[in-house]
Length: 479
Image (cartoon, rainbow, N blue to C red):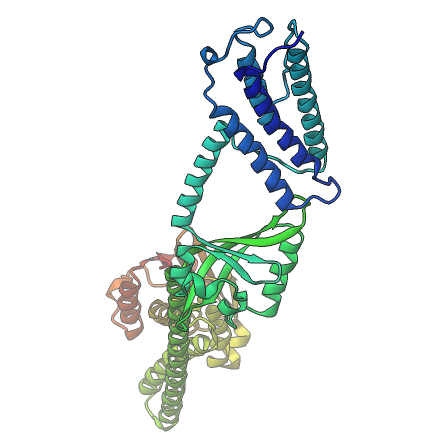
């Protein structure tokens, strides 16, 4: 039985023609040598097909009823064609009618769908991704377009080919480099290069991105007017459907202000270090001269001692000379120190103990034994080390001069320790001690007056124990 061609059949043949065109397009694609251009043509063909199908706006009322087409046959055919064009092969067209024409149409649509599905599968096995412009894809593209717009407004974007020629820049990059887009496109990236970074810097970047890895660093670039700008950039390779790198994408943030601040801080730090170095040299020179002047004063006193006739004058000059030598030794330690702000009084105390034995002659050196218990690395500022040194000098000198009288043997115990944040100095002898009727605070000798005055400068507590000799204990804060 034959039938005249109806509008419904004409429309079905029309959409079949479009689907056949899409299939013919994909047949031309060589799976072993697929180009981006050919894949693009195929995607466009599918998109055109969907557009043609959806724009028909077919109304079944415009179709002459025939006994071999039920009311929803045409709509089902159209829906199935759209599914295939959108690469949805989850269903097949299932139409059975009383006429061979309907069966042929249904069979043709399903065969074309199978052929299309098979071709897509083969391309997917070659890692070729095909997308068509469906409603979902349009939404995704709009979302992606919004992301790209936001990125374009917030970052500097540069795309170069594998040979280093610029193929794309955004407005932000043009503003930073002070070039127009036309001035940058087609130019080699060397146009932006400064001599700041060494060859190894660029070599490492090249090796990393050629291996398909991301590379990130801060780059100093040259602008059109000769000024420089800094970018914190991430470079990623762009690959084609065959996995071959064709371009490199650099997404950057402008950090020029930050780098200027960093460079200024570095310069300021250098200036401060140099200033401190100069001041240290000056202080060392000053202390060196002070030490020399103290030694000169000590030498002049030595001459006066030799010329003096009165015993009391000689003793006073000798005591003063010992005080000068104690200060000279302090300045010598300061001059030798790498840090002119502090003096290691542990080392200073040890040195002063050795000096006493020489100052008081061979006789007392033989008769008097000095034992010490000195904790290492106790430091004081020069302002506090001077009164400490003079107090220590007075205490030990008093032991040598007054503690033992004519005793054959004598012993002096010196201890210096840090207890928490306090320094404790003890000087004890096993000599005759003080007369019990004498109040230490009422003694009017120069040495005692010095000890009292210097103790106040140190803000120290001083105590005396007059038992089996004399023990003097001094406690003060470390700093």
